[in-house]
Length: 114
Image 1 (cartoon, rainbow, N blue to C red):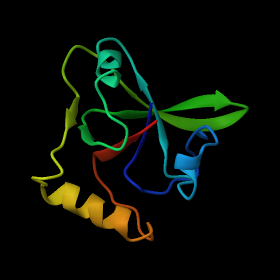
Image 2: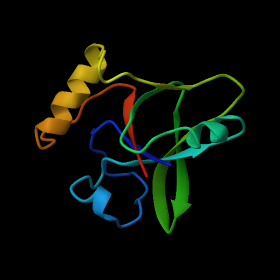
Image 3: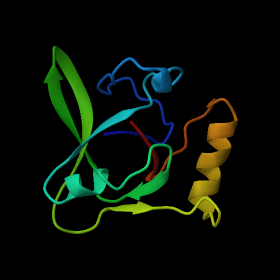
């Protein structure tokens, strides 16, 4: 699964070349879901907004050292957000989406992109 909070990093694993990833170079995290977290991926809708709790960034050797995200365990760590009832973090992320992504948004709010 691929997610973004629009923060730019130079050490992220490269996502697949696809139309949805254009203009998001260095801003897409490859998220590895382990255990019960992998069931949540089936329920996620492309383009929806979620909070992701306890994501760890880990290094993987992919020809060169790259960073991917990982979550696992039995607790519910992914929560869908309601765009019609946004909180402060979601409002900041939505502004970032609509502003040609000049500045990344820090935080744990992500947009699911497949």
